[in-house]
Amino acid sequence: MTRHPHCAELVELALRQAPAPDAPEEPAGHRAALHAHLVHCTPCRVELAALRRVVAALCTGEPLDPELTPVPPGVWRRIADEVDREE
Ligand SMILES: [Zn+2]
Image 1 (cartoon, rainbow, N blue to C red):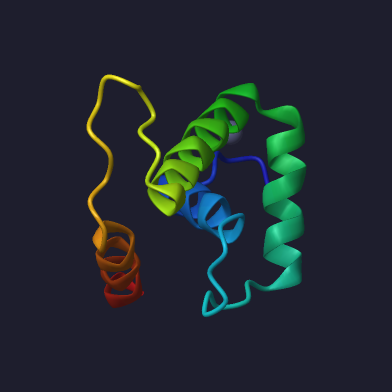
Image 2: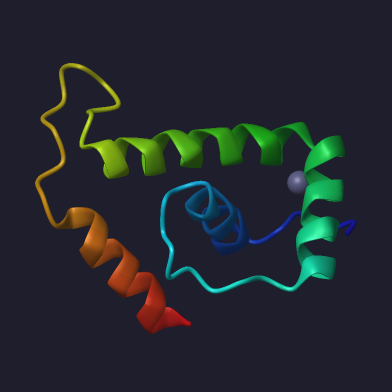
């Protein structure tokens, strides 16, 4: 994969790290290409790391920034539903 993955692809990758048992499986070849790109592309790795922090914060309800208010219950589920609708 020479092009940068689409933002949505990075979001999906980040979501896959979260405990979401109903997440659809991604074709192995595509995942391998995505990982191969990430190994060599610092900007994409940085973006993925940021997305994973957001996903982790949403899953735990912990604020990313201590000065921010915690994510209310149900937000994660609504975002997941929104992602499902776009597919
Ligand atoms: Zn990239």
